Image (cartoon, rainbow, N blue to C red; front, side, top):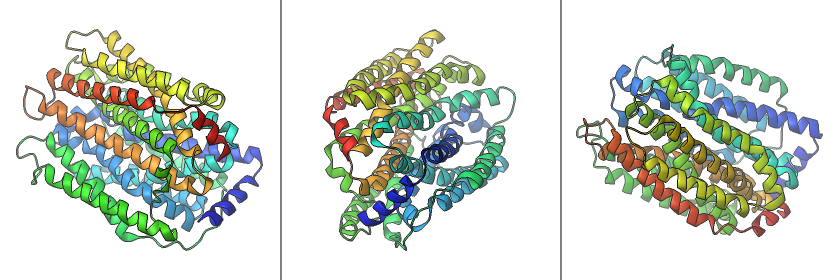
Length: 480
């Protein structure tokens, strides 16, 4: 309800500016460590299929399952942030993540490894909305673009450089060291947060609507399971035809949305859907979804597969090849945020969408004889396009909302980011597998080219959607 939100905001603004910067810094460092794990295993997919004796379409669930768990948990963060203090939520988030990292490092096989990834995702999911709502609470409107630029480094660069770090580890160590290296970082963030993170607020005994949680899990789980099954070989462990879980999941999501519209009349919704009544929020949300489909599906999954399967590069070289693009995305974060504060979203988003579309079609032209430098250049262009889009879209999508909808808007935005990433991962792996002419379950050059063509179509859709972004909406953001 508006009253509690106002009280919380007032409490947050009483903190002096240095304290606000320290709190955001703690959140950013913690989130970076956690989100890094979204894609750190992507470079190891081929090694994991051999070591764990599973197919490519099964092992990709280490990434899709991570994203899907986040999509299921994130809608509950509105409840968690009202029921518990930000400090309690922060400590619970990092504790869960650290436990999942330990389980993953010790995993004897695929099921336990997947369970560890689910625990990691559960902790990460709570951190994202906590980070975004804290910015809306502690940062004045005229500085939100620059601050969101820093968050862009966390949300986009961490998964972008995940394959680089993974490749460096795999060049001399086993995949388990990806978790043993992250674990001390997570514990360090937990200790720092326990000492320095003192942001508290008023709480109230908000009821958790369990049917909504179950509908959310069934909906997103069914859709993603069905999509992954499309690329599985016959007898690949999927007992149902793919369309059955997809239809069942879509039906569950429809009931979930209907239930939220009923519950929000009494401010009891698990996920308030009233942000969808704001045009600027919807346009930014659609563009963000298309962006994350390609960020995680193409840049983090398909590109490493292409480098190792078609160009036959080592995991170390594959990781280095995607590093320049990740650095470009990181360097653009704050400058683009500052430009957004001055000029608004439209002058930045349209060129970014154009760069995204062009680079995706360049990927579709790559083959077995393509030089590595051409791959790197196309990837840098793609990540630069993402850099011009992400900060303006994140800032505008929340800025056009009234203050009492910020928490639910950030939950919707974070949920859709993870769903889109999981959707992109499942679709592109399935398309690459179905389009391949080699052994079943092993994407080849033909299958990967088909997947890149599909990504090019997504890029064109993003470019068309970017034309609906209005410059005036950035001004409106500052007044909300």
